[in-house]
Amino acid sequence: MLLARALRAAAALRPALPPRRPLSSLPPRALLPPPPLARSLWQRSDGGGWRGALLRPRRGSAGGVSCGCGGLHTEGDKAFAQFLTDEIKEERKIQKHKALPKVSGGWELEVHGTEARLVRKVAGEKITVTFNINNSIPPAVDDEAPEEQKPDEQEEPDITSTPNFVVEVIKDDTKQTLVLDCHYPEDEVGHEGEEESDIFTIREVSFQPTGESDWKDTNYTLNTDSLDWALYDHLMDFLADRGVDNTFADELIELSTALEHQEYIKFLEDLKSFVKCQ
Image (cartoon, rainbow, N blue to C red; front, side, top):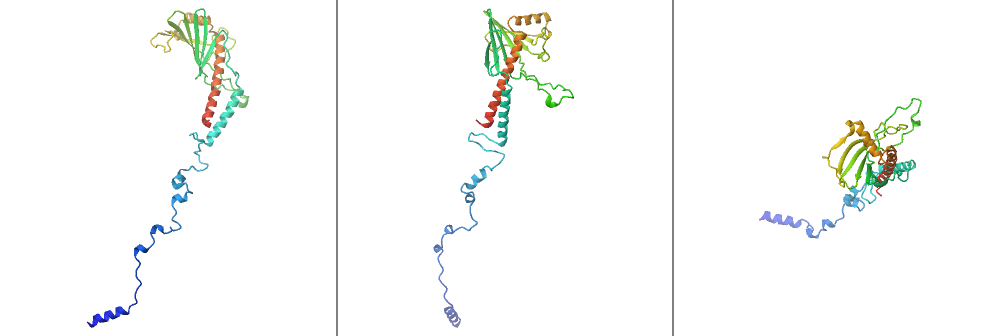
């Protein structure tokens, strides 16, 4: 009894503590101001968002920018377009024919892109000559220049188009067309003063159905490599009588060269527009 009274007396003499505040009276954590270094990546991207900042192209990067056409534009493209502009100007300066030259002998010209067709009608016959300028320029041959001649003084040879061409002879009221495949031998082109030499040769001869665009491989084709010379000469005379001779072959080279140069300039212009995305 005496111990219990002593403890109660000691407790009565201890100073009273202030009452504890309930947890509900504290301000919510979400309403407390954030510490100074707690800014989000979205705030650090100047309003564009951290994803936008990562995807935004760097200034001066090699990837270039787009003009809105969906294509890529780089400094290399700009230099390429300028080069093409200068190249087109130079090609126009050396262009010999602003319009395609005509072929003498009453030939009518039809052009469809890189393919050209010459048509002539004579005494119940229709003669058609067709050629394509693609891959018609023979490879350049590097001739050794004289030692005393400087490289800058060497004249570049003129580019000449010598395409293979096909002659079709159609007679009225017949169901067959005589087809002669001709070409320019490399050792004959450019030789002058050789009147007896033919500047073109016949390579193959065959008959094909008249009016059909697709020729049949099952029809017999005569190869002239092993042909008797007498028969070959008659075939050449057959063509000459219908206007396909050395004069025609020379004029065809001039026409093909002009057409090839015209299409080359057009290709450069299209390439420039493609690079510049115009």
